[in-house]
Amino acid sequence: MPYASNGETRLYYEAHGDGPPLALVMGLGGSIQAWGMQIPKLSQRYRVIAMDNRGAGRSDKPDVPYSIAGMAGDLACVLDAAGVDSAHVMGASMGGFIAQAFYHAYPGRTRSLILACTGASLYDPEGEPPDQTAMEIITRDRHGSTLRENMAAVAEVFYHPAFRRRVPDLVDRLTRFEEQLPQPPHAYHRQLEAVRAFDPAPDFQRGILAPTLVLHGADDRAWPPGNARLLARRIPGAELVILDNAAHMLMVERPQAFNDAVMDFLDRHRENNAGATGEYGRRHEREG
Image (cartoon, rainbow, N blue to C red; front, side):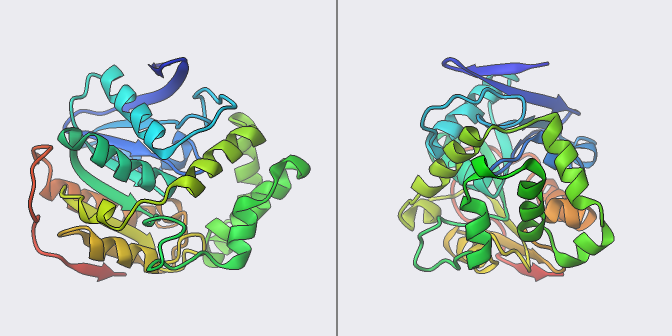
């Protein structure tokens, strides 16, 4: 199993396929498993480098403060270990924060950004806050709940009702996945603290000059779609795609539409030179 290191923290990653590098960064509590419907497709044309953030999956889970900037540094260490100078970077949810921070720390290593089911920050006055139930579930103390109770709460908030009806054993599946790669409560809360502490000024997004795709579910309760529209307004030249009948886990709920949007964007910026500046293509919005 390949590991990178950032100081004393070991970071698990996988590399699949050949072509221009594409880094995948998952969100709060998530692991590489969540990209299971993306890696086989994207690796047909790109070298996909998927990582487990500190605190999740097979990476180390130190009980020390985490930060979004620090996790962007983790991504840089993973790319170093994989022998990659620059990459397209796709981040989902908290991973979208990490992708934005990675661009600002390493603009010369960022070929493009794909920001999925994410936003500017939890506190941005122009953003659309999570609904109350979603926020309560995301921030609940996991020490006093069973694993299945936690996964039932995740299913309720992160997955579209239509998807839950199509997959009646969703909670059982999520529970089995978590049993394979358990995340200790302290690691979840360390990641959550990093999300809560991330509150950049609006110029943080306005300063992103890499080609950017903002990809979101129309029925996301954790990050309502107003946050995607805000990112697309702020980031120069950003493209916006909102998928109907999808919630927070749109890459699982509508994998073909998600993959098609990502591949269309990547293929148009396939050989982009990292570190270039200026506006990229025409701004366009698409829903469907």
